[in-house]
Structures are given as structure tokens and as C-alpha cells.
Length: 176
Image (cartoon, rainbow, N blue to C red; front, side, top):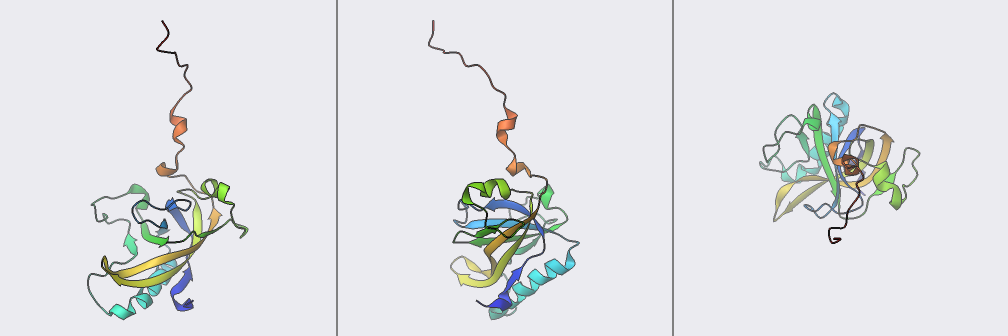
């Protein structure tokens, strides 16, 4: 393993976690990390790994990069309120990722969705990787492991939608 390209991130807010099932779009296990812009050292450390990984491309224009500004609309023109004031970093893996609790114990598979939710606080071990293929060129972060380091406010995607309903009596429409 090239340790020059690996890093354990600064603490971040977990967003769009696809940890037990593959993301329908990418076909990978994936997360989005929201790192506050005030964490200058944490963001710089990630950008340094990106710079090392993209060295084979030199100063080539048009490279896709994994670190984005949450105050700038995404490629679909959308601004997400929970991303304001943050840098957005995506990481993914073709393989299941090791998931640890705050005591560095592996989280049992049947508890993953209760432990890791959009809004909790985590750190991740990732590797910067340069790619060049039919879909373009750029740098991505390969997700290797995640540790939950704190609770947080669940984001809308983490809501329990059952809370939106109340029990009702059902009548049989076929009774006369």
C-alpha cells in the first residue's frame, strides 16, 4: 500500500451513506463527507493527497477532483442547505468497507444502519487514486474504513418515515 496517498480524515458529518448496499448511481459503497471550512488543516491534508495522486497528469485541465465547495451549486445547479459552510468530499469502494464504533470495534452487520446515519460524526481512512479511462480523468478517494466518533442531528434522508403516519383501522371493502 502506498502510504503517501492514504490518510485518516479529520472529523466530518456523514452524508449519503451507502454502507450496506451499493449506491444505485455509482455501483459502489460510498459516502459523502462534510468537513467544516473552518477545519483548514483537515481540508489541506486531503488536498495534499489529491495533489500527490494527480501528479501523473501534471497541470492538465478538466480533471475531476473529489473535494468540492458546499457553497457552490453542484453540476446539476443544486445547493444543499446542509452542505453550506462545508467542503464536500466523496469516497467510494467496490468492496464492503470496515466499519468501526468509537471503541474501534467492528460494527455487526445487523447494526450498521443504526450506528451510521446521515448526520453522525465520523473519521475515515481513504486513499487518493488517480484514474484515466473512458469516463474521464481525475482523482478519487477510495474508501477503506470508517469510524463513528460522535452523534449528530439526523439529516432528512435519515428520517424514520414511519413517524409520518398513525395507526388506522382498516375496513373490509368487500363486506356488505
